[in-house]
Each structure stands twice: as structure tokens, then as C-alpha cells.
Amino acid sequence: MGVTRLKRKDRKNKARANNRQTRIKQLLLTPVIKNVDMDELRAQFGEAPKNKVAASEETAAE
Image (tube, rainbow, N blue to C red; front, side, top):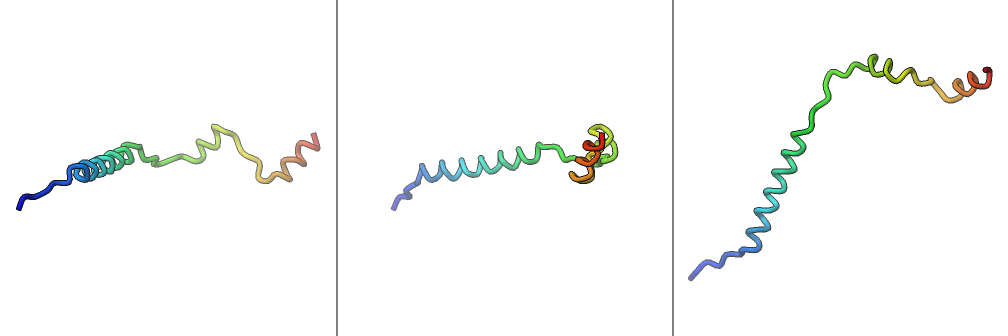
């Protein structure tokens, strides 16, 4: 008896495997953020107000 190959299923399985591998490679390409200096970031953007009530009182006083 001969063996019947399911060609469409074979192509689909290979495509799934290739897509999975490329997805994993894309995730590994993204750089990992390490050693972030929070004080330096805050200095770049300026200090945010601690709460909205205190900020509105300061603007009303001016």
C-alpha cells in the first residue's frame, strides 16, 4: 500500500513553524532597557506636582 502525503497540511505546518520562529526572533531583536537613571530622567522632564490639589492651590495663589 502506498503512502498518501497530505501536501496542504504539510505546507501549513511548515508555515506555522516558520512564523513561530520569526516571531521569536523579532522578540529577541528588541533591546532590553537596563540601568535607567531615574533622577536624570526626572531632571530632563522637570518635577511633576505631587497631587492635583496642591498644584491648583499654587496656581490660584499666583
